[in-house]
Length: 178
Image (cartoon, rainbow, N blue to C red):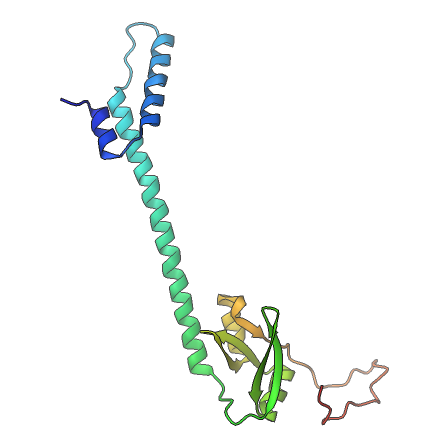
């Protein structure tokens, strides 16, 4: 008949090093305790330790599962925001160049969309290894969930002229392309 300690070792609830350590600790306590004092049974202590370790492992696994579920929910929200607010850029002949992860990328857009991108009314987001145009407000909502997906979001430029601007009288031509 095997002892409870041997059964716990076979079940994998405790390992040999922990069992040896508990046995050593018990032996030290017995030497230090006066005779006649009762102490907790070794097998009960091993069982309690095994339960505590299992509960800690289960909490960690549940935490990882919950984080994965939250990540998937956020991804689904972003997909829905992009699909319902995407701006059609078909028929574009003008190029809008931007950098993403250290590489220069190019999108073909219409002149109107190009101006909206420059002025900050539209933004570019990266979704499923592609790029989509969305309104700036939607890009802000996406950035709240995952800022890495918003590639270009120019802040809105005020078209008003600053009174103290020394170059106010020198206007930039509208047809100037960089």
